[in-house]
Length: 282
Image 1 (spheres, rainbow, N blue to C red):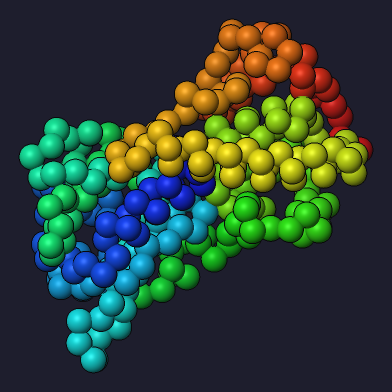
Image 2 (cartoon, rainbow, N blue to C red; image 1 turned 90 degrees about the horizontal axis):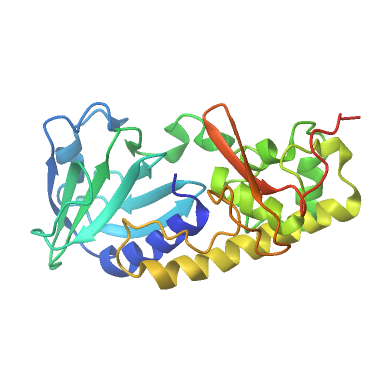
């Protein structure tokens, strides 16, 4: 699943190429409509999008938001919100470029030699057309952005929670933008076992967790920007320390990286650097 660093880099590329351009045509694959696209305006995908200018592209949590201008005075602006989820990707490329996966929608813009494709091998992602992102289920429940939250706010929001720390980090209503992969990397950086209960964390450990979150995410954004370039369908993660590196040596201590699979989610960590295990909560 693309997480905050990948989507932040994608947002930057799309802002540079698409801001100020008008959508002149939207191609929808025969099987790319109702499941992938949720038209909350009720006025039709192509009818709503064609002729609108991209005013801005922003990221909120794991969503990319395309703000599209009205075409006439009586019309309202709309937002196209893309939540790639596990298998969705965007590809910015020449029209004849090889497809990076099954294409569900293709967007054509005025004066741009490239097209924007939405690809999704398992049709798990979602695209919403809406007059307000607040209409998107659970969108308004997202917590503050992981890179915008202060240490004091982080502490306050963490205090009432009692679950395992990895599960808390990946809750969008706690902080927005962190998923399975970067939670592993943050917890490794903070030297915290992913299954530690929040109630067992000391004040210093909470501070270390916050600093690790900031350091890992900011560093990853720079790394992803460098490795991805304009190839936004890529997901550079070769720089990870532990995630999906089961059996490899920990880059910090040389111990073996472990893996635990639960609820269809793989958790990777170093038992030497991240001691503690399943400590009973208070």
